[in-house]
Length: 154
Image (cartoon, rainbow, N blue to C red; front, side, top):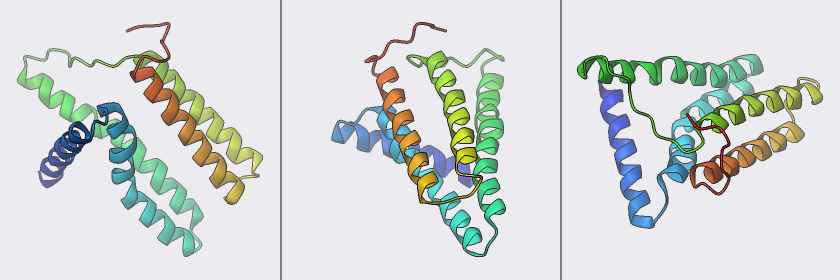
């Protein structure tokens, strides 16, 4: 229950700060909220990686994202839907289909990058990951702000 309350407050506060500073919701969600929710994963991954448990560090970051997608989205949507006669949850996003395709492409590029670095974490891989995230962020914001138009609409 506390996680739900603080999550709601975090999103509401981010929305208010974004409105006050003139920052769009898309940029706030893709940057500030994403970084804020990833900091605990980063800290735990760094701690276990320094102890020589690199596999655990990587699986922790991947596992938390899988948990977010399989529980963090469906459970609140199921609760909303059950309160509204099991009606579908309306989702509005410019270029949603292209954003999903972009996520799959990024996953492919991440796997290729890791393979090209011989499955070892080093500065080259870290720089590549940062570059891939920046490209993803840029393209996602451009899709949401309709700078780039998605040819497929859902």
